Image (tube, rainbow, N blue to C red; front, side):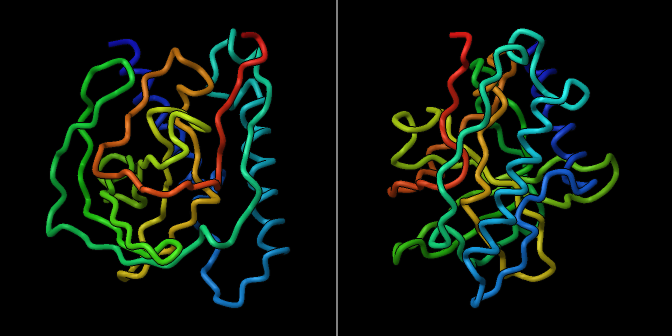
Length: 217
């Protein structure tokens, strides 16, 4: 139960970061003429702010032991081929759906619909879920857990995820350069959602966050 509470707190804090602009999830506008150099600078600046948040005692999600041993975030190089435009397919009404947590317990998410896109010429479809927002307000972002051919080899076995602001229309930017690890990768005291089998991508997604290694281990 304690781990589940920590999981809920973790999601609440991340949601607050998104709503206040501290975590820029998928906010760089899509542009077919995007310049890779300037885009890489934007992503690098975002990663530096994320690192600073982990290292700041006031904002970190790490418990004392893991804060002291924190060795820094690890990322793949920025690669524009992992930034694509897809379609958001909303359900008429969100439905409750359980995802397993890393401690073996289920946690109820609100299943929002699916996103579909092409990645390196191959069709991909992923289930997406409402990301927690202010109580009484509608969802402002979607939670997109996924696994791929790097999972369990170069990356955490439970998968990684994207947090994407919900667009007004159906077109949506899917940018794996902004993929992040669940917090339990950095601090096992937290329980984190495991990506569902349906969200497996049969490609190596060498973009975004990489596996983390605690310097105290």
